[in-house]
Image (cartoon, rainbow, N blue to C red; front, side, top):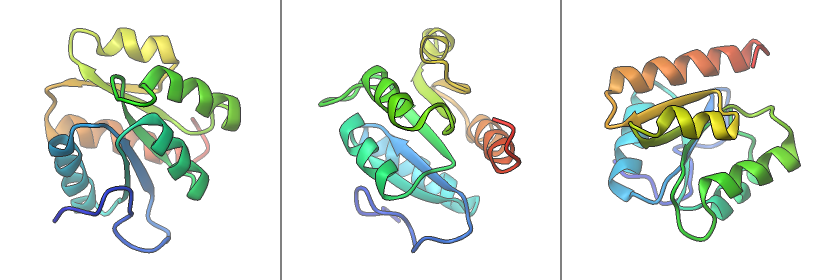
Length: 138
């Protein structure tokens, strides 16, 4: 069940919105499927510029961010996001496992997922951060 690029799986609602910013369509489809199964709404962006546009349309509870994207990379996106919105939207960095913690630290990200990762790891980090965000703890 692929969702058209950039669209959410349903109209705005009470379910948390996760923004997936990654230029790998296969990974994006896996993430959309997995997060939809957990009853999250999902928006997608293939680069940082599109991701900023999605955030302007509807503020997500969490952003899953690839670092190496065309047009605007993850570092540039994170700086622009923080300038516009402060640090109120948690970011989880998705990158090569050997670099994941370093990249997360560079951005001040709230979490990291090193590729390859399991669905259990994805769910653990997403569920934890969405709960913290909904309780105002992030």
